[in-house]
Image 1: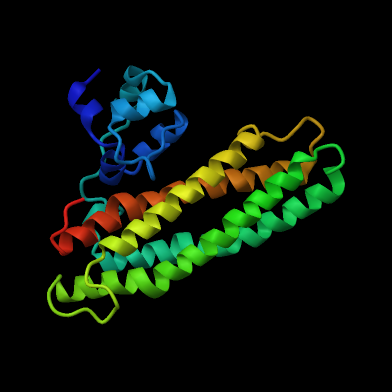
Image 2: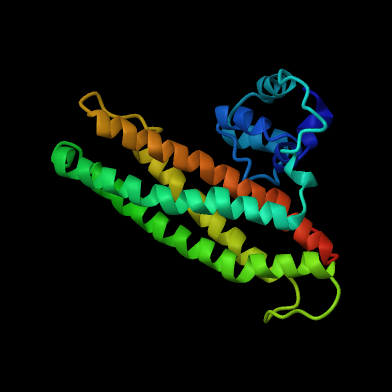
Length: 239
């Protein structure tokens, strides 16, 4: 195994080239909340061969150094706008659709698949927590980060805290809670695999939940491995 690559944090690798997220997802490696783990540590936690993961990473074609999608080069304002318009908007639109489909599945299949009630209740709780979470980010944390970017870390703050460290810590804990919840839902759905007697709605609903998990991983990654470290660095705070 390439020892230097094995020692690099997973989140740092994904931040440098987001195409690697697909490789880590393929092997069940957490690159968002678990992004501070090294590749070697993440492979051990996921019970996968690090040599195989490294080989898959190396197999990616060279990235375009001038690709404007390289988020680590974006200004903080642009990164925040992207998170809100892409991921927060997706959360708000996907949650009611998935909830409607789960309700239909319970009506049609609930007697044969009682686990659907638990899945629906768990997803509803996750959704309510995420909706509160994105509101806190949009009304409290993100405006403060915009202010930090505008004053370049100098001057007095117009919000009731002087550093961004504490609100970031709160958001990271909520990310971990959401990650735990979605992992439980994944386990209960056998990796979003519909049962043999599942109808088209069953398949569509499970595909929607799988897509929701993928978006959540990207959403949390952009915040924890790109936006938050950049905001902390603007205030001279080490990660």
